[in-house]
Length: 503
Image (tube, rainbow, N blue to C red; front, side, top):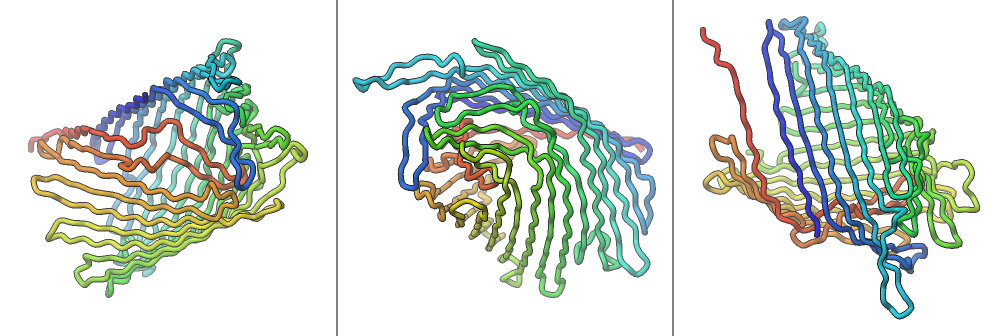
């Protein structure tokens, strides 16, 4: 039996002061999951063979996450006329997060007579408490100006400084473990946009942009625990309290143009990212007993290059039917984190490459209040490494979405996604999924209240399998905090208060 819940609240206040604007915003988000998780451990070691471990388990879980965000900002218009505009926005943000995860692990041990004996795994039953507080002091900057016969140029900048305090505690019957860390993080961003046409101040016709950024992130709190988790008989998880923060440095270049005569549009983007102290999961495989030991570590030498372009055009003179085409490619160099117990020293590097092609056809019949969108996409990934085999994986997606605006202000939509994945050497991983969702909603009381009803994963096909291919290997996980094939009813309230100024 599973029970999940989520509560959200948001309030925002604006106050005009002497031509400038003061904003205050508070967000509250709480979600939880209570119930049982049945797990059957499968060890896929050989190409066409699955070996089931001699253990089944039942997790009795109680999970609760609470996040509160408070933000205060003040917009200062330091210059504004027909040829230039400048805004400085100092801001302060405080984020408080708390997470509680209690899991009681019950093991079912098979007996010679075919029966099972259950007992509580005291060593791996646990209670984890996580807490983090982040103070951010930053500055937004926007400055646009008209160049002499050269169009417009716009600068966007952001300089935040984050002070993050993290604590995580593990409590179980045999021991208690607590880690506390404090980080100072910098995430500056600077972007320049150029609009060549003198009468195109917003860049709706032609635009060129150059962006540089740096981002620092912290490890997951649970990674910092100095603990060994053996609840999964095939995978032993180890923490690493010596993990450092990860730093990404990126650069991107983009171009976009709109053809006014025939309403066509095109774009192209190029991006590059370098990562230092990348947080990755090291996996050491024991060939004798078929088990893995997993531990988060920091590695250097990772970078990524990507390129994407697209073209859009109307297929009807009244622009009710549109065709959008896009294609992209990426190349990544990263550390190979897969080792066995005979070769577990140092890191070698592997190369990953990928492509994506997508076509989207969209039709909007305003007279019948119907919108239809069909998308077909193909994604491919490959690995080049020193391993004996280099796989080429492909994924084909077909998506159909139908939205109808019914009488009495009712909106209804149906989404269907057909995903086929193939190219794995291990045939059991080549699969096909069909995801189908349906939604219906209506706004009442002058759109201040929205009622909605959603049916998610109608045919119970999602299973919520997540697939990742990178230097950590081919990772396929089943998300545990997930309710398949469910119906969700929700109510959304929208309030807006504004002062009436007498003249």
